[in-house]
Picture 1: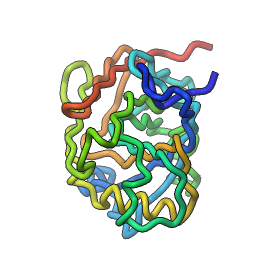
Picture 2: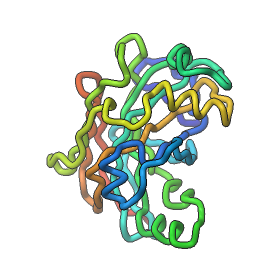
Picture 3: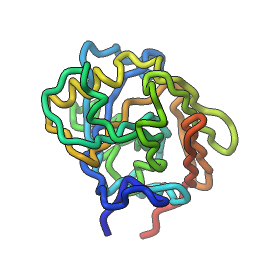
Length: 223
């Protein structure tokens, strides 16, 4: 069964494409990770098979002993585009969502130590919970949106997209210079400060303030 971006009556024929992720787009998060702010966006990919939806479960993989939450604002591409300039970038957007970039931090730490890609630490099944899509017409300024994450009803991450180092338009412009963006592609724009561990049994509640919510729990992967 393919995964779909839209749920609950929205254009279900649109299949999820590439999941393009950004790192260190918030200054305070870069500081908490003891990393320098990049001059250009840092891009990596997650597989579409990592997507789950509201009410589903994050599966704690046997290969890891440390999972971290990273809440992120997401951009859904609606029209094919390549090498566009930021002035026209939002014309190619279908809508927005809120999601989680779940990370096996111990696996990522090993990868960083050896200079390896982050794919394994980011790519397990269930590592990309996403909300339903809010159509673009309902969010007039994606560069000024509040979003947050609670773990077991305690606020862990809270930010506004106006805190990002790069604007949504700049990110789309940069990515489209590298790869063609197609309908159904999802851009996760990076996480703010406050990332931390999640454990089996935790309940994660994510909110795109005033627009949509997402709730998932954490369960153990069975052999």
